[in-house]
Length: 202
Ligand code: M6P
Ligand code: ZN
Image (tube, rainbow, N blue to C red):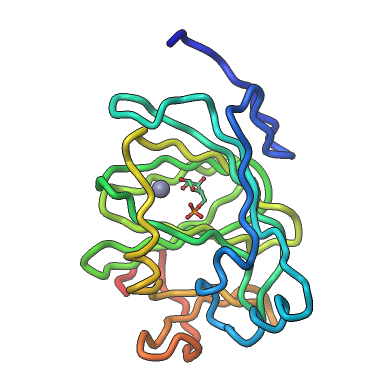
């Protein structure tokens, strides 16, 4: 292939030229949210919101390449839990680089040994996800959260291990703003509020 450049729009998240666009609706990630009743009730009423969309650069999903994609998470909540990505491990443990472009978000990360970390994602913030850390991004603002992610072409997305083990922490809209809750893994709907530092263990 030939070297190329692509233009990023930091407000809209568009990537030009893009190989493809993607979008994920609530019905494709219903199990991700703590309040299953709220999620199912929305769907039962015919409301299947687009949670996030994005654009993929024209890079082969192969070893040696660095692929990149923009993601735009809409503002909103399911129950009181903010709209977020499904979250994944990489099939081949490998790092990922994030750049905040617009909006205001939080990245939740957890290692295969159960350590937890979070980092705020905002315009001009870069976040490094080391190999072996699952990652999920949450929009805690009132506007779309737009960011760029760069990862190895052969990284692969492993959603099952995240769905099986769950994320240990979730972000809910509280009376005074976003609240990070430690989940009781035995019951997805149970939680207790907490305010850990960015590198506290889970
Ligand atoms: C970021 C990257 C992508 C990921 C996307 C949506 O852009 O991490 O690899 O696909 O977010 O997240 P998810 O695949 O977990 O739904
Ligand atoms: Zn990833």
